[in-house]
Image (cartoon, rainbow, N blue to C red):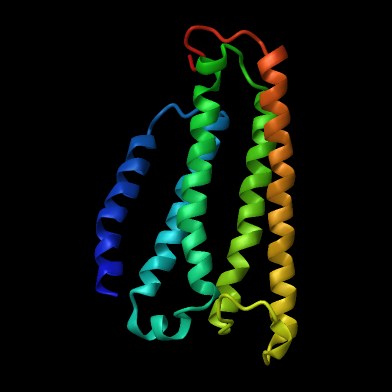
Length: 188
């Protein structure tokens, strides 16, 4: 638990420096920036829940429950996937020589961001209710109806993310063939 709290200090400094970098900047809300801001928000949510894990009283309650699963996925999945998409959209014009469709990029972002939150946020709730992770038969638990409803909502969020990926693949494949030719510096 001490390591959890110690990790919070340099992570908080990193997040502060990222936000300070954006402060008073001329931010253009193009697709790479949207994914970068999405990464930042997911990382902050995961970091806040991580600080809760450092609390002895709460850690006893949520250890080995879906709370831990939600925390981990906000930090790792939200951090890596949104960061990777930011990089793909940023470097795509340079790598392919073509521009992608910005509108489809924004649609992809919103499906991914909303789907990710619908998938992982409810897992905090059932973790606080005490549902252990790695459980596949929910009917044996006292709050089985609540657990079932929430896990089904999580599944819908995953389907929303999956549907958003169709926009990504369509955008990339279409842009490689028919996209506008990218200028030397596509971000000016």
